[in-house]
Length: 387
Ligand SMILES: CS(=O)(=O)N1CCC(Oc2ccc(-c3c(C(=O)NC[C@H]4CC[C@H](C(=O)O)CC4)noc3-c3cc(Cl)c(O)cc3O)cc2)CC1
Image (cartoon, rainbow, N blue to C red; front, top):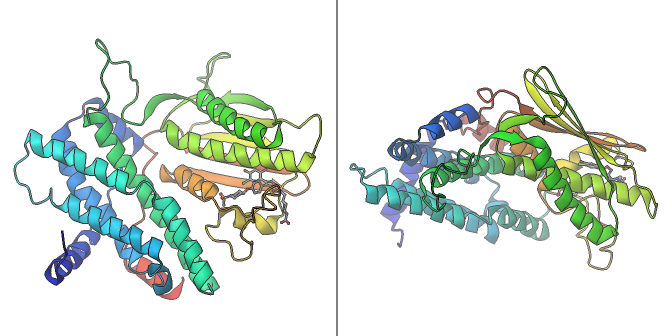
């Protein structure tokens, strides 16, 4: 649909209108309680407002990005995807009657939006590279980009969580096996997530890559400690989104394996990665400890940067020495997944020895609230002044 000037003015007004609302954070408990007695109409009425609110809040920040970045082809493409998705979802706010047809069209529409945005992370990374290759990037711009991308990817995690819950609960794609449903999940949430199962899955997949590249890999030793409930043989469980936890663990195992294999060279015996699971009253912690020689404290912040000011582009010729500065977004986005439900991901490295990486999660699902970026005057001020 061609956007006339009138349309653009209308959308600018709608963007302002929806960005005046703050996103409404949900806890894992609220997701579970709703999913146990799920009503599609209730979910539709909530989402047809909440999705445009969350889109509008982050779109206002996209508009505040440095001009040079906003003009990059890849960043412009992402901006267009957001405007198209915002326009499409608003169509449902205009509908008064709620019919099975409208509910089905809504489901189809949010699946289309999810698919449209599937390559946003890679496309934004390409936009940052386009900027670096065409402009000198000062420190203020780099800080603005770091600040924006943390908020932008957190917003994207939250929007995809809402879409996934609705489409998994009501999308009807999953053919239910006859008789009592086999799936214990509530949408993408596992109410009894066995941590050891997710840990072993992430470890085996990271180990496969490590074996392919280094022809060997460090072993994994797991210890579990939990107050009260843990009997000798049972595994620690938590109400969580296994795919989020897998993403974090896979990234951390890759980093530990790379450090250990690079630090110990052609050793016959590589020191194992030790993973400690602890469940307290407030926190569930997963600590990965490796003896990969660690990194200097001065480089800690580099690990979480989306943009490298100094590291050269890794040339194909020296592919065997994978630089500290990678070009993924694995670690910063893993930290966002941990923070999304009010947890955290912390790296503590001791140069000359090794690194501890700790994933903190909330033990109680009613405390695991979404952490959502909110557009307001303070946000705008940061983009203008940098603090
Ligand atoms: C942005 S990203 O998400 O895409 N990503 C971040 C991750 C990065 O890869 C890695 C991997 C491992 C390491 C690493 C080293 C290491 O490498 N030491 C040796 C260098 C010490 C400085 C030395 C120098 O002075 O430059 C040059 C050698 N030591 O300890 C770790 C380590 C890190 C994490 Cl986070 C961990 O969880 C476990 C670990 O053992 C660093 C970087 C790709 C990019």
